Length: 315
Ligand code: NAD
Ligand code: UDP
Image (cartoon, rainbow, N blue to C red):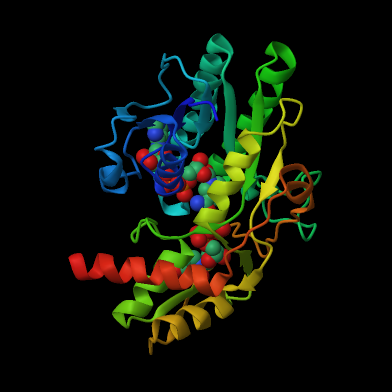
């Protein structure tokens, strides 16, 4: 296998840090680009001694120049609390950031993968979601900075391909969880586990009947790498996620059971435009990448609970 030079934007984040780790393990040279908005040096501390790993503090809304073979564009806050903190910045990161990364890919003839999202389907009226569904997104709602930013990024990617023949790949990532999630970032898996471990009530938004499908991080990273390594004729978009759909009430029961917690449930308002159901149709990923998730949700949650227990014992 050829040793490649690979740029990972957002490399100090949850998914990015796992991706950097895996690419180094596969024998590549990795450059992690991050502005540390939601990412942390702690996520990549264990990689710092590797001479083939480099970290650069940089905001992708500003141009960046380097020579690499591949670019994984993961930079963008992913949890609703963080992406709604500065919505204009979130849009700039997806739009101006993608333009900068695509411009770089064009100039140096690198392959580039975009971390898109199931949020491009909005509150979907088709279930499960297939790649040919155009989505149901509120362009002026509180999630729009993220959803519409990612939709515009997809449009940029396909047009850089059409106009400039840039080798692109688009992954539509569904809810992913695992060690190194930020316990403070408000996503459901980290919230529920932290609450269960502390013995606090588990916060269910709305009725808790809304559903999501949760994919373990190692499976997701495998999918992203397989996608990057497909033939140039395959661009996606392709759904990556675990079709194992569950309601937030079921998730709370499972987390309670696996962490041996006696926490109860407490109910809060459902956030604006919160999608009611979400499940990936992964037939394309199976066919084009030979990929499907391997980690059962119980096993993945157990590993994640262990991680949060360790975090707690260190603080
Ligand atoms: P994360 O917030 O942990 O990581 C994002 C990283 O990007 C952080 O390290 C952050 O500091 C960095 N960043 C943000 N804005 C930046 C900018 N302007 N310039 C440079 N760096 C910047 O989130 P994550 O869960 O690791 O998500 C990674 C990518 O995958 C995101 O693009 C996200 O939209 C996408 N995604 C994630 C999920 C999921 O469930 N985790 C689902 C769908 C899509
Ligand atoms: N959610 C919840 N309690 C929480 C955090 C989130 O019930 O403490 C719900 C949220 O309303 C949504 C689902 O869990 O319906 C997933 O939320 P998350 O923010 O993790 O991801 P996204 O909505 O972006 O898929």
